[in-house]
Image (cartoon, rainbow, N blue to C red; front, side):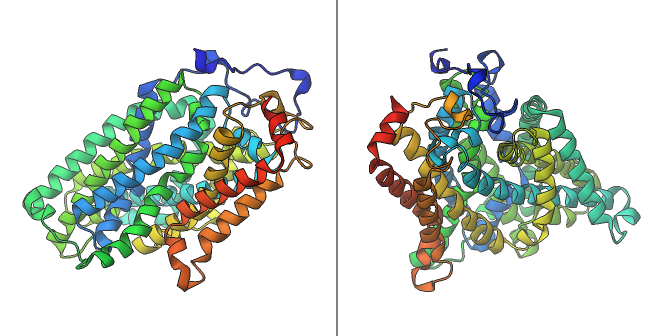
Length: 478
């Protein structure tokens, strides 16, 4: 395994207990068991979820026709695959998670800045997925026991019941997550295809469904909606594009993780997005309006058996995605704040609590808030982090890291009292330029391109600032 040769042996005498614990330690070669199928199924399971469906259905509700929506999603996922694979490299080579990897660019203490930004976004997603899961449970009760589902506080009971189920899975650890992904992925695709077949039959086949025109009459009208939508597509997985080392640290090789991701992400997202597009288009034919929420759509059909099966599928898909995409990373990030006191499990509990406090029921109020508000907005926070990480690893350090120094003070990544202020300044510059358009209408286009603008500004600024101090840069690379 030549790509793992950088390996994972640390000198215990050099480790700082404030920067190291079992969960943040490099994964040794004998524990790196994830192959191509593991990563392909990971992406299938993470893609086959309600937020993906609602991403696609939101584009239809916003005015796109089916091929415009599917094409936008495919393009966005091909774009985000690039930073995904670039950041994945260090995880596989050194066996380290995201909060440790980002110490190279931000410093051993400064890494907490991007880690907490990433963690807060993940907490928001955790809350969103848990709210969806709770709604699905309530809808299942409406089918099986209508009087119970009608109880005034039923939705909150269901919400917290699903929250507890998520906490149980994360308490069991990373191998339980891998098991869920491997088992759940094929099942979810099969159920999705079955739902597509059933509802298009009700609508009269694919002909009427796919012939529904979009509402845009000119290219300028379409482009005004396309740009923030594409940014939203990139923003959708910009979270995992940062913390992908949390998963690729378990890879058997670089080829395994890269091939699995390249096969899994674009294909799974495009296929399941098509299901969301077609089902939502069918809802227009049947009901005269787009129903973008699948739980609400299922409630409109009086087919108890089908509804119950579909809602169970929603629960499994939501649990898969929530634990893999929205708990693993923030658990590591919170652990990075105080490795001596916060374990991976404790970080997961913190994630669950913060996710509730972010009031997910408001984040999903409508498709406009979801795509142009939530997705585009936080992409302006995460794009700059990705730009700095990639610029540091590939341009400044030429893929060479000092593993021991990532876990100790006064090493190559100490910078100024543990903080690389060049990275912090670059991050602030990227976020400012990316989000300023949200407040200044005349340059609103900057916000529409938030992820791309933040990525370019922060990455470019970081390289320029680091090259002003070549002596220190060369010291970390010798």
